[in-house]
Image (cartoon, rainbow, N blue to C red):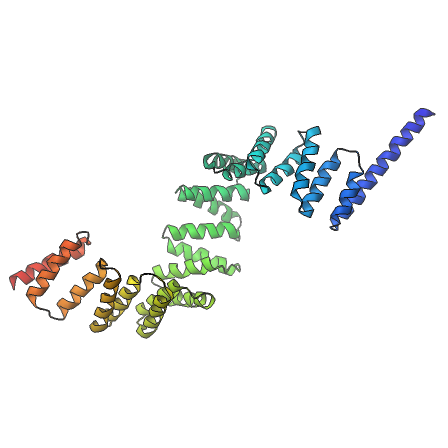
Length: 369
């Protein structure tokens, strides 16, 4: 009789336990965190500490969540699921050394790519980059398409100047999914840095098709078109950027585009605007204004802007060089030009060989005269 009563009591206890958990879970699901925690606390089962920890996390009270995890782990330190969630919270709390210990224990019992990723992340957060790299590589070997570890690995490889290795990772993902936005962004920037502008243009345009319109995408795409001398396309994108942000460099680039497109009035307006917006030196802006007027054979204005460039930077090699060329073209005396060319070669010994040869030949011609 007593034995039957005991079994009945245990059965009732298990039903109550299950009901309390079910009630608390349903309260948690609809955001009633305090009531859920209150219901979990009525339980005697060890799992209540894990449930309470998750409820406190959902509420945003990481301090209490941290204590609840520790209450669980004091009684069962080997539960993988609890340790994994605890490790994630340690990273969120910036307790990176503790997180490292936690995930180190996890990978010893389960070589899981996710565990290796978070172990790598805990090392990276402590600036232990070589250890982080090693564990990201371990994760990547276990799952070559696990995004988080491969993305981190690619970024670290870029920082170590191992650009091609990083690019291979991006391409591997993009071969599987051409719409992998983060890997596409990374590869586009790699192509840009490598001055592989044709491929960069393809990647940045693909990002636009996928609805990605961040400023850096438009910026790099416009500059890629500029480097490929597609000035019309470049100017259109810089116009879009200018509509969003009055940035001096955007006016400068668009002004250069207009200059190369022989729209000199627009070029002058934009480059002058870039000068007004800047708060430091303007030698390059003045130089390009001089260069575009020189192309139009307006030598008076070209000299005016070249001299302004030199006023900003007396060692601006190209501006000094072009002033000499214009003065010679306009018929300054042979003796004057001879002296100026000789002084120029002494002042700028690092002049490109082609220009150095031209000046040497010109000096010889002037001497003969």
